[in-house]
Amino acid sequence: MADPAFTSAQPTGATGCLVLADGTVVWGMGFGAAGEAVGEVCFNTAMTGYQEILTDPSYAAQIVTFTFPHIGNVGANTEDVESAVEGAVGCIVREEITPSSNFRSTQQFAEWMAEICKIGISGVDTRALTRRIRLSGAPNAVIAHSPDGEFDLPALLERARSWPGLEGMDLAQRVSREKQQAWEGGSWTLGSGYGSAEGDKLPHVVAIDYGSKDNIFRNLVKAGARVTVVPAKATQDEVMALKPDGVFLSNGPGDPAATGVYAVPVIKALLDADVPLFGICLGHQMLALATGAKTTKMHQGHRGANHPVKRLDSGVVEITSMNHGFAVDGATLPDSVEETHVSLFDGSNCGISIKGKKAFGVQYHPEASPGPQDSFYLFERFVGMLS
Image (cartoon, rainbow, N blue to C red; front, side):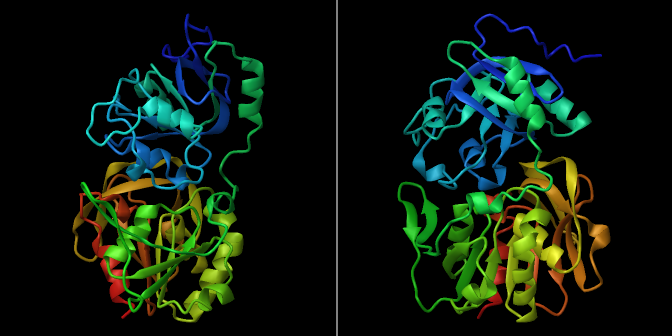
């Protein structure tokens, strides 16, 4: 039986729609940019941080359904943007977008969405849509906003059905920096903004950018490192020419196996050279691939700011921030790899350490201040390996 929350009949005044590949049409009020965009529909359970979520390159080619009903009510500002490159293509929210009410706000949420070319739809039964994703998996869809309420539904449906989906898709090249960059930003403080990175004699981290969040680099600086960022397709020779004390493998979007075609050989070479390595999210997955493990597409993924993860060495539980639709298959980890963290939601792998090497990775995002400081020790551990 069809879910009564969804209907193909366009309600009066509807200016936004979501057309799923199975033919389902979800109607609402469009905001932000006008136009259409295709992607995978996922859901995020975080109550805060919508700007950081929408500008996280890990969400490239995805449409985010926010389960928390009040999105946009604290407006937008430049300090909470994670990256200037592509992030989520749009979002779906429950309540009407209201005027912002926050002393840090410099722009209305809908205006900011339009400025960065992201499409939004409000007035959607996000609980019903989330339930549908949980039962049937993350669908491909087109999100559209037409201020005059005119939509070519057959064309939107055809676009949703013809999109190949994230499995097998390498998106890291699309969101990576194109040139090497010396990172300059430090940690953020209220009223002062972001500080500056200081100290040429600090341990040098070369960060490979597969679609990174800027706050990762700020946390490496906070932990006592200086950082140089290089593109996703940087070779081992290009990385080693920078004389790194350690190499960081960033987060990013898409299928890790597809990105791994060019990234894994570099990571293997760095492991063979005994270079200390630390990977987050996609970087963690590709570090696992470099050891011979496998990754798999998840049914609905993990996306939110309250995911419990257990450290297997101590039994300590961290509250973590997550955003991933692929995961390392723990059953495929070789004997040379120790599983260090697991999700308490479903038991999936959330951390590894390579025996005999200074190399480890975690599936979650310690830079997102979950807990709020449960996971900063990972940056300190990595930088501590470099001295």
